[in-house]
Length: 382
Image (cartoon, rainbow, N blue to C red):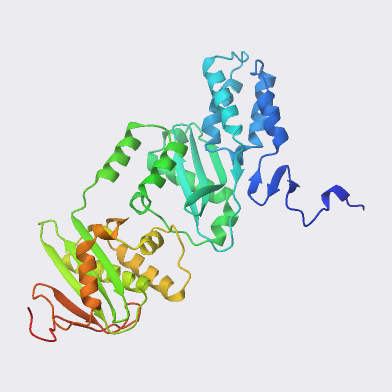
C-alpha cells in the first residue's frame, strides 16, 4: 500500500479537500465547477439537462432552496418527447448561473457557539438553512432541500413545516446531536433578520407579507420599560408598566448588594417581568436601553460569565410564561422614566415621592430564596 503524496499535505492555510476549496474564511465551491457551469450553453437535449442536474446535485449544499431553483430542470427530465427548451427554462438557468457566479461561501461553526436553523416550505419543496452569527452578520453553514412527493404536496402548511424539520434533522444529524434545541418564534427575532430570511428563503406571497406587516405594526396591550443603575453609592433598578387601560405602574428597586451595570439591568428586567405576571399580562412589549441584555435575550450574543448566564436563563424562563412578547433596544433618552427611577433607587437619599413604590432587594434574583421588603419609607415622604 502506498499513499498519494498530493493527498498528504498538512499545515497549509488553504487547499482542495473532497472536491471543495477549504480555507480560513470557510468552505467554497470548487472554482472549476463554477467555471464549467458558467461556460455551459443552454441545454437543448435530454442528455444536456441530465448533465446540468448532475452538476447541480454536487453543489446543492451551497445553494439556498436548491430544489425550488432546479425544479424547472427536473420537470424537463420527466417529458418523454424530449426537451423543448422554452423561456421559463432559460430564465431559471440564467438565474442559477448568476447565483453561483457570486462564489457561495459556507462558514465554519466554532465550538460551543449557538447555531440557527431556518425552515421554509413551498408548493413543491421544503428547504432549510443552518447559519451562525458573527459580528451581527448571519453566515450560512449548510443548505438542505427536498422535493415533495405528489402525496406530500397535499400536506397542510404545518405538516410541510414538520417535514422540513425532519428532513433537516436527518441530513444534519451531527449538528442536532451536538446542540441543545430551542424554538424561537418570529417575535424573538429582530425584524431585519426576519425580513432577510423571508427574502432569501421563502416565496413572495400575500400571506408572508401580511404576517410581516402585522408583526412589525402589532401594538401590544402591555408595555414594560426597565433600566438598571450602578454607581459608587449603590445599585438599583427602575420599572414602568403600562396597562391596557392606560394606567402606569412605577416601581423602584434598591439593592442591598453590589451589582454591576449589566446585573442591575437584568434585575430590572426580571423584576418587571414578575410585576407583569402578577398583574395578569399575557403579552408584553419590553423596552430596555441595555444593548447587552437585549442581544443576549434575542440570542444575538452569548453570555459568558457564570452569573450572567444564570440571569439570562431566569429572564428567558419568565419571558416564556407570556403568550407573545417583543423586546426592543431603545436609546436612554427614550427610556427616561425608567432611567429616573433607577437613578433614584441607587442614590443615597432616604426619601422619595409617595406615588412611587420603593422596594429593597436583599439578595440577587438568581439566589434561590430571595427576600423583598416593599413599601417601607425610611423617612417622611415628600
